[in-house]
Amino acid sequence: MKRAGFILALALCLPAFARGQTGTPRTITALAFQEGAPGGSALSTGVISYVVIPKACTLVGWDIDVDAGTATVATWKVATGTAIPTVSNTISTSGVAISTGTAIRSTTLSDFTTTSFAAGDIVAANISAVSGVGFINFELELTCAQ
View: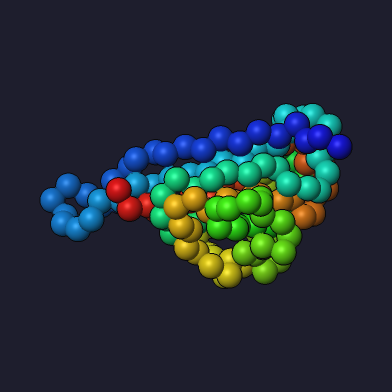
Protein backbone atom coordinates (compact mmCIF):
# COMPACT_ATOMS: atom_id res chain seq x y z
CA MET A 1 0.00 0.00 0.00
CA LYS A 2 1.42 3.37 -0.99
CA ARG A 3 1.52 5.90 1.83
CA ALA A 4 0.28 9.41 1.19
CA GLY A 5 2.86 11.07 3.44
CA PHE A 6 5.42 13.67 2.56
CA ILE A 7 8.55 15.07 4.13
CA LEU A 8 9.59 18.62 4.74
CA ALA A 9 13.16 19.45 5.69
CA LEU A 10 13.74 22.91 7.09
CA ALA A 11 17.06 24.60 7.71
CA LEU A 12 16.10 27.41 10.05
CA CYS A 13 19.63 28.83 10.32
CA LEU A 14 19.14 30.26 13.80
CA PRO A 15 22.29 31.19 15.70
CA ALA A 16 22.77 28.97 18.72
CA PHE A 17 24.30 31.78 20.78
CA ALA A 18 23.55 35.41 21.48
CA ARG A 19 25.37 38.40 19.99
CA GLY A 20 28.70 39.01 21.65
CA GLN A 21 29.37 35.38 22.53
CA THR A 22 32.28 33.62 20.92
CA GLY A 23 32.52 30.14 19.47
CA THR A 24 31.55 28.30 16.34
CA PRO A 25 28.16 29.31 14.98
CA ARG A 26 25.66 26.47 14.62
CA THR A 27 22.43 26.16 12.74
CA ILE A 28 19.29 24.65 14.18
CA THR A 29 17.71 22.27 11.70
CA ALA A 30 14.32 20.61 12.02
CA LEU A 31 13.57 17.54 9.95
CA ALA A 32 9.79 17.25 9.75
CA PHE A 33 8.13 14.02 8.70
CA GLN A 34 4.38 14.50 8.04
CA GLU A 35 1.58 12.06 7.23
CA GLY A 36 -2.18 12.34 6.72
CA ALA A 37 -4.59 15.24 7.10
CA PRO A 38 -6.15 16.70 10.26
CA GLY A 39 -9.47 14.93 10.82
CA GLY A 40 -8.65 12.52 7.98
CA SER A 41 -8.72 8.75 7.83
CA ALA A 42 -6.92 6.89 10.60
CA LEU A 43 -3.23 6.30 9.93
CA SER A 44 -1.60 2.88 10.02
CA THR A 45 1.89 1.81 11.03
CA GLY A 46 4.75 2.14 8.57
CA VAL A 47 7.45 4.49 7.29
CA ILE A 48 6.36 8.10 6.90
CA SER A 49 9.29 9.03 4.65
CA TYR A 50 13.07 9.23 4.23
CA VAL A 51 15.51 12.16 4.19
CA VAL A 52 19.23 12.56 3.50
CA ILE A 53 21.15 14.59 6.08
CA PRO A 54 23.11 17.31 4.19
CA LYS A 55 25.85 17.87 6.78
CA ALA A 56 27.08 16.52 10.10
CA CYS A 57 24.59 17.21 12.91
CA THR A 58 23.76 16.30 16.50
CA LEU A 59 20.26 15.44 17.72
CA VAL A 60 19.11 17.83 20.48
CA GLY A 61 15.35 17.24 20.67
CA TRP A 62 12.20 15.87 19.05
CA ASP A 63 8.55 16.87 18.60
CA ILE A 64 5.32 15.02 17.81
CA ASP A 65 2.07 16.77 16.84
CA VAL A 66 -1.15 14.86 16.12
CA ASP A 67 -4.76 15.82 15.49
CA ALA A 68 -6.00 13.22 18.04
CA GLY A 69 -5.07 9.83 19.46
CA THR A 70 -1.74 8.26 20.34
CA ALA A 71 1.36 7.36 18.36
CA THR A 72 4.88 5.98 18.71
CA VAL A 73 7.59 6.85 16.19
CA ALA A 74 10.90 5.03 15.76
CA THR A 75 13.86 6.56 13.95
CA TRP A 76 16.02 4.58 11.52
CA LYS A 77 19.41 5.68 10.17
CA VAL A 78 21.93 4.25 7.71
CA ALA A 79 25.07 5.66 6.12
CA THR A 80 24.66 6.79 2.56
CA GLY A 81 25.20 4.04 0.04
CA THR A 82 23.00 1.67 -1.86
CA ALA A 83 20.01 1.13 0.44
CA ILE A 84 17.45 3.04 2.51
CA PRO A 85 17.23 2.28 6.24
CA THR A 86 15.07 -0.56 7.54
CA VAL A 87 14.01 -1.72 11.00
CA SER A 88 17.43 -3.35 11.38
CA ASN A 89 18.93 0.18 11.27
CA THR A 90 16.85 1.55 14.15
CA ILE A 91 18.44 4.12 16.44
CA SER A 92 15.42 4.01 18.77
CA THR A 93 15.17 1.59 21.68
CA SER A 94 11.35 1.62 21.68
CA GLY A 95 10.40 4.85 19.90
CA VAL A 96 9.24 8.22 21.19
CA ALA A 97 5.53 8.64 21.84
CA ILE A 98 2.61 10.95 22.39
CA SER A 99 -0.02 9.49 24.70
CA THR A 100 -1.95 12.55 25.89
CA GLY A 101 -2.76 15.89 24.29
CA THR A 102 -1.95 16.79 20.70
CA ALA A 103 1.63 18.09 20.95
CA ILE A 104 4.80 17.09 22.76
CA ARG A 105 8.36 18.43 22.60
CA SER A 106 11.28 16.88 24.42
CA THR A 107 15.02 17.19 24.77
CA THR A 108 15.19 13.82 26.56
CA LEU A 109 17.16 11.61 24.19
CA SER A 110 17.40 8.39 26.22
CA ASP A 111 15.39 6.46 23.60
CA PHE A 112 18.04 7.12 20.95
CA THR A 113 21.10 4.86 20.70
CA THR A 114 23.05 7.64 18.96
CA THR A 115 22.63 11.38 18.60
CA SER A 116 25.24 11.82 15.84
CA PHE A 117 24.39 12.17 12.15
CA ALA A 118 27.02 12.29 9.40
CA ALA A 119 26.64 14.13 6.11
CA GLY A 120 24.83 11.81 3.74
CA ASP A 121 23.12 9.65 6.39
CA ILE A 122 19.65 8.55 5.33
CA VAL A 123 17.01 8.86 8.08
CA ALA A 124 13.51 7.40 8.23
CA ALA A 125 10.62 8.03 10.61
CA ASN A 126 8.54 4.90 11.18
CA ILE A 127 5.14 4.89 12.92
CA SER A 128 5.48 1.75 15.04
CA ALA A 129 2.19 2.14 16.94
CA VAL A 130 -0.82 4.35 16.29
CA SER A 131 -4.43 4.69 17.41
CA GLY A 132 -6.99 7.32 16.38
CA VAL A 133 -4.51 9.58 14.56
CA GLY A 134 -5.46 11.17 11.22
CA PHE A 135 -2.44 13.51 11.00
CA ILE A 136 1.05 13.32 12.48
CA ASN A 137 4.04 15.65 12.33
CA PHE A 138 7.28 14.18 13.73
CA GLU A 139 10.36 16.40 13.94
CA LEU A 140 13.98 15.79 14.81
CA GLU A 141 15.74 18.91 16.11
CA LEU A 142 19.41 18.98 15.12
CA THR A 143 22.34 21.33 15.60
CA CYS A 144 24.71 21.37 12.66
CA ALA A 145 28.12 22.91 12.15
CA GLN A 146 28.03 25.84 9.72
